[in-house]
Every structure is written in structure tokens, then in C-alpha cells.
Image (tube, rainbow over all chains, first blue to last red; front, side):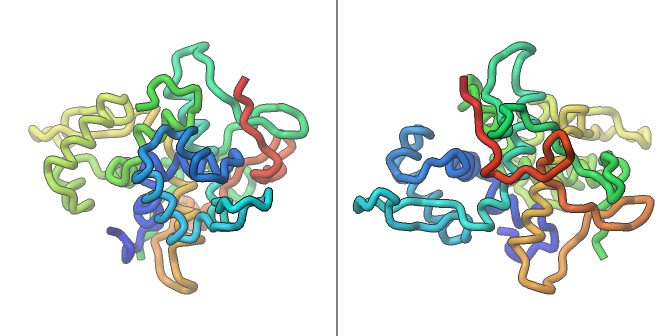
Length: 142
Length: 142
């Protein structure tokens, strides 16, 4: 749709402005690799999941590889471009934590593996490491 | 769909896993406020745009207010919860810049208003300010 857009948000949104695509990527970060496991995790219809996996393969966010256990299964794993979506997933998660839960309502938490500490809030920083407010930023279109 | 999910990514994706919703939010950050201006910017059908604006109002990401010029128009502006999507938009933009353009292909750029400098790459940091790799993080579900 926006394959020729000069706006990087539009080009990203073409691929990622889709609930199932985002959840497939989330599961891939969580270590899910097989069709049946994605299906169980997401509760998505077979054809919808197959369509999203194909789109993400075609776009180079996932790649297929033989099963790590030597079985006949194909596995879906993130490419480097897919792994680069980590900030997108962290931003969605942290926004959801702030705005999509009642006070005290339980949710899963992203923690540092080594310490168990929740990841600090991620936000845009300037070159001095100070947070940048939306009002302090502007899109340059020329 | 995932209104009861313990996963904040799923709850965010229910609202934001939609191309038009993301582009409406992007335009709102860029200062677009009126129905006709969103429509011109997005090229979305009237009913689609009306539906997305209503969803974003209902979810508390946008609010309506009388036109700033005293005319009869209603304007749509980001709420605090909507403005908190800034990291999500920056993450989508920076991923798009890296992975959705050919080398040297032109795109718009998010810059600091005061200096004109492009915003540095945003990524999750630990409490010491060191970047956190996906492999160094894990979702705690209990």
C-alpha cells in the first residue's frame, strides 16, 4: 500500500499494522518456532496464521530452517531484520503496561535474564542522553 | 480480542495492530487535527477513517475539542495516553528507515526541533544505560 511512501512509519505500518503479524513476531522472540506452537499460542485459524507467516517470510523478517531436533519439521526463526524489531515490541509492551491495565491488574513482565529486573522504560533520547518529548521533535520532509 | 490477555503486547496490538490506526496517530503527532486533513493525508475512505477515529476516541488515545480557530469544526488531538505512543512511533520509524528503504533511497527524518539533528537510534537500555539485546531479556509469566 505504502511501498513508495517517503514516510518510514507508513512502510513499517504496511507490514506491522496487523495484529496477527505483531503477535507472531512476539512469539518468535519468546522462542516459538513451529506452526503448531504458533497456532496453539495465538488461537489463530490455520489459514490466517499461514498467510501471516508467508508475509513475514516474504518480507525477510522470518526465515525457515530445518528443525533443531533433526525431525522433519520446518522452523520459523527471526532474521536480523526481525530481531531489529525488539525496540518496537518493547515500546508496544511498555505502552500496554501503562495504559491497557487497571491499577494492580496482573500482566507478564519483560526482565533482564541475568538479574530478573524489569527493563527500564524506553524512550527517545537526544545525543546527550536526555529524553526527547514529542514537542521537541519534528518530521523533516524535504 | 485480547482484552483479558496477561500480555501487554497483545493488548496494545488489539488497538495498534492496524495500519490506519497507526497512520492516524502518526498524523496526530504531526499536527493534523481535522477530519478532512486526515482524509487528505491518508487517502483513506471516509467510513474507514471515521471508524478508526471513533476507535481511538473510545480507547482514550484521541480526544475531540472545538476548533482552535473558533470555527464550527471539531478537532482530534492526542490525549496523554496517545502522546505516550511516541516511543512506539519512533521505533516503527527507525525500523522502517533501516529495513524498508534501498540504500540511498530518500525518506523523511525525525529531527530535534532545536538543532535539526536526527534523533539517535532508540533501544532498550538496562539500569546502567547499556543496550539490552533480545537474548538478554526474557518474559516472566508468573
